Length: 412
Image 1: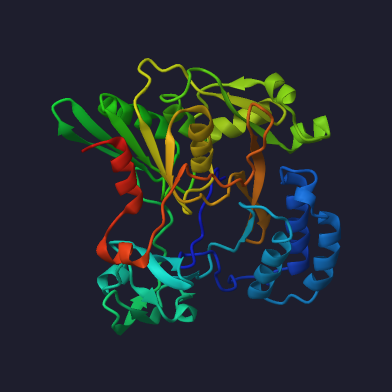
Image 2: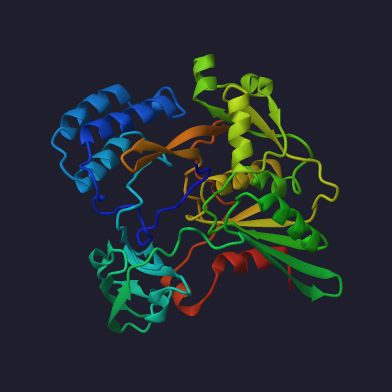
């Protein structure tokens, strides 16, 4: 079971193993299990406007020709891609040998692939790959896990060099713990607090309390969500420090609830849904949805010491899922200022479900609505202050987002 979002960057480990060992796979039966699982469990009975039954008929005919895992995975990805949705994907057998990228992530600058992040313990780092290097051979990156990728890169000095880098899965599971914080004293009575949050997983609520206890006397607070791939509703505990007290934050609705009302939910529907407090683990969230016929409303809490000084939230294209839910709350319900670039637009709640013969499918089983009836399904969060990055920033180690937040925090 997974609640949240895993951002699949081009160079991450992905679930693309070779065919599993053992008895031959019955691809026709596997196809039917895949189609019927999505048909029964996808949160939207209207499939975001896609005709899932007609899609199934079209791909069912093609499935008869499938003879190996690669062909089935490609067919499944194409079929699932007919629904415009995040958090929807095929997962190949874990016993198989995977395909991977390298321990680095690229972004596009002027139409070119530039490395924006290199994992410090990766072979990519050991071989000398650094942020700001431009990738000249993207077609050579992916391959069998543990094998070597022969790359050509252009350094920040303009010189081209070859690198041979081991293919690794470096981005998942994420670094733990997901919270880090510190405070800098800039004057006799002035302090700037900083929290970097990479995941809102089980245990995040306790970490939020510890961080706010340490940083509660800050003159301004910077919350960095730029690498946050999601998690669960534990983000609400941190949000509670900045809002108006106990209030409805968002509704989480599943297929049974949406089928029961037979239309898009309204503010009145959401107001009538059961209230849920302090469901800060994935298991508690799924249990609450199940116990209330697929529809619940999460509330923030009235904390003893709310934070009422300036707050700046850093966001970007790697901010996804539950982190986007937090960012939406901060944008719409608090005075916080969001800084950076628009988020991923991948706000759904998914579960990974076995479909047989070692395969699974990740399916969005819940979606989010605001108390006013506005849906936030896969809606990217725009910043209040847009910050542009250049390759030169990566080459020189600058952080324009953080620099702007510090400027606005008035640390001078």
